[in-house]
Image (cartoon, rainbow, N blue to C red):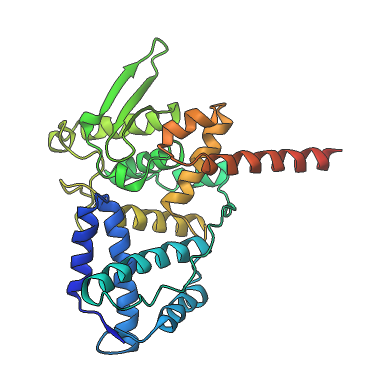
Length: 309
């Protein structure tokens, strides 16, 4: 039996920080572990773990009642394993962690249902509003950077207006380059689609100096239920909730930022960009993420050709 005080999670977060983990990574680990501890405390008070069966029951519950995918279960188990390896090493060095003999499932590299251009068109159309509010400019720009450029949520909420450079072309078109900081530090050229929505947001915020200064966040949250922006950066939860609302509007069952990021790969491939260029554009470390989409495109092309013959 292993008792788990709430302070253990805080200590684990400090340990991850000392190992050089990103704040976004620490947040994900902490969230996964906190969810497990909450589940455990609802099941048994005070919060303690008997053996590996408790963890197996938790994973079964996530699979059955929460409908989590294999990759989500895999990520949660990795978080829990790391936590108990640290916790036991600190408090009970002689004890074998309860996760020791639970195997980590293999990564599922198959693609979930991929969004279509029609889905993206409906998604962007759902953001239009006759009230000319800040949200009617912010949301389409956010969605465009997610689905056309594949920028991750934590990167988006860190962007400031000073991170954008404007390029005016002879044909009167305006495009932008954008500097992204963090672990996937890079500078990318935005597509014409994304640039159009970002330009509209920039024109709107230019009427409100408080929100258009170089140090201001590119994307601000709203003040409660009002349509007015608050001068602070959005949270990842704010983006998640915005996508949830839009998905309900157009009747898409599940919509999250990673699903839009996957669409960005399909979009970039359709534009004729090489897998190497896409890897740099998205800051992807594993070529396999892009190779899956290439394989799917080839399968779709074969199926289409067979249907015509």
